[in-house]
Image 1 (cartoon, one colour):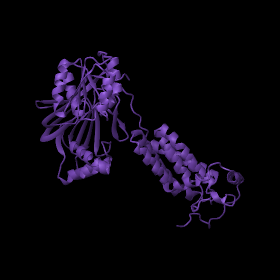
Image 2: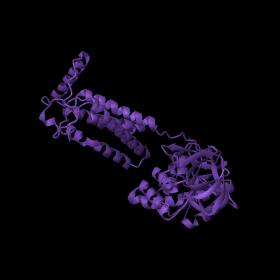
Image 3: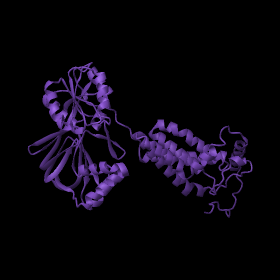
Image 4: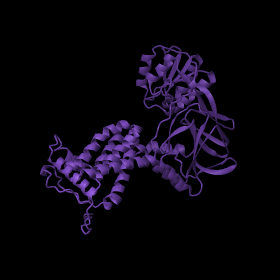
Length: 495
């Protein structure tokens, strides 16, 4: 490695303002070197070394992502993207534009100096730019996480002056450039703001302070014990029926015949079956999620027994849309979404492999497996034109787009289907791999998205599988997807 300070360049001529600023910068550096920094001795040099090549910020981003919260993951990703842009700018333009030598170490105590001195030019500070870029990027996505990261970033920037490798102006300019890089990234990828929750139009339902009249059927095989215990404590007069998965539908039918309010606790299929019975018997529905709430319960604002019990006790409910599919003499409903094509197989492969290799890699491996098995896109007639489709996704309500993937639904009674398609088209294999690489259904040349109240597909080939809320059925011929606006009444906390 060679230094990027070109010693053959002529020294610039005198310039009164510049010379005054440089002298002030040198004086501030000497002043900082002469001061005693309490508690900094054992910390700042190590912190400065840990930030080499962005290692410190990669570790922080990994720890944030490990928390499992979507906000933390998005903030970590934005921070790393900002850091990458800042590093690229500093190393390719900044340091080669102003070839400033490093400060002299004569005034810096030996105990502060780094064992390995940097040999690149001094202006601006790359460490400070990376620290500011990461912290600002995180803060632009999540102010709370930004507040936690900011002291660490400030300490890294201060360590560059403390160890004598940068002048104060190097650090300030680097920090400004880093923050600018974070704002530039935000301009390209704006912050994801969840929509205001509107879980259906308000509906009149009975208030059951102790739960009398509520009959809730629970899948005993699901991870529901804690939620059921909490519900029994909050609504002691509610009737809870626990049964095996194969008996859930039969028990729901019995419960619908005697209940004032039909309740269900189980997977998406159980919730779908309960919704069908609630529609048939004109009953309000109460959904108790298991340990991990499904998307419909989450969008309702019901994440556990506490929220459901409060809504049932106070009589808070909303009327929400129900998606419907019809094909020949077969008809079904969906609260979350229905899909055609390879989605069931991709979802199964992702679930099977995601443990050891992660979700993104599992999606890629699943796509490769389908291609190796000779799977081809299905063909359907849409709008009078025959089109090859790898996947068609129809969500019950418009999903807020978190970055490139579907997110939460802001309004559960908007009368719209959120339809997204992965085209087959020319080069179908690369298109499927591109869709799997993108992880979901982004807007790109291999995808299309539209919001409609009704969709009709003709000439769907026999043997095509349609999934709706986790249930699978076979369709062929003409398929119609539409909405039942405000058809289902569901207990949920008031917005």
